[in-house]
Image 1 (tube, helix red, strand yellow):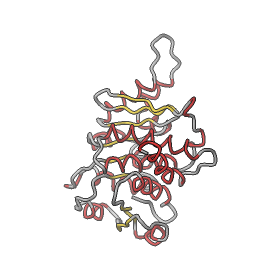
Image 2: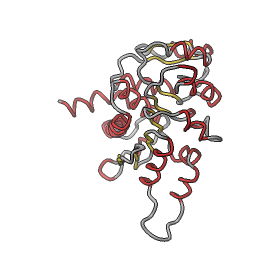
Image 3: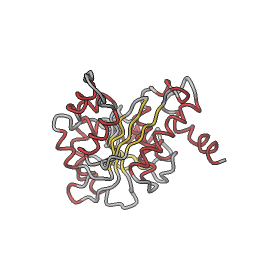
Length: 262
């Protein structure tokens, strides 16, 4: 779902990522003020006019919409209204859902309100600043100078966050850590021989959210979708090389898939 006029780029990046990774049908939820702007920018991606919670609930009656991405460029006020509906309040059937950016920041004052709405098919994708605001006590332990071992690591922090949220948490960074509430955990490193510093570009995280959403739509579980998307995200950056911008990432997927599958 996009924000208003002038705030649609992040959602369009996520939608393109979901489409390229194989979601099939991708639709952007657009407020009336941004409908013309988005229509001028997309071709393969569909549009649904969504102004408020009632409009979203109506659109979500369509069972073909098998996964949701909430947050990129959405705006915190719009997120506060629409996120509860998307997560199942008001009788809407919950779906696998990626929560990124504004969908997370809309609830940083009372994160427990967000955690109470989440379900096990959600994936949270915070970067370091968002993680610290959602899980301030966990971040404090992570950032504290250790005085004895073993030190509290990013793996420990992400596992604790996933257990608290009750869903998969993907803690972004050069050493992206992905954890499930049951303690399963993996690290996707973009360091050493997989280093891709040019991946730190505006909009890159929006594309990652789209990759995860597309894999969820294809039927992958939340942990598997997050792990595969994080790996593919780095591989796309490495395939393109320096000079990368976020728009390039989805367009590198076919090349990465050809290299993988011949």
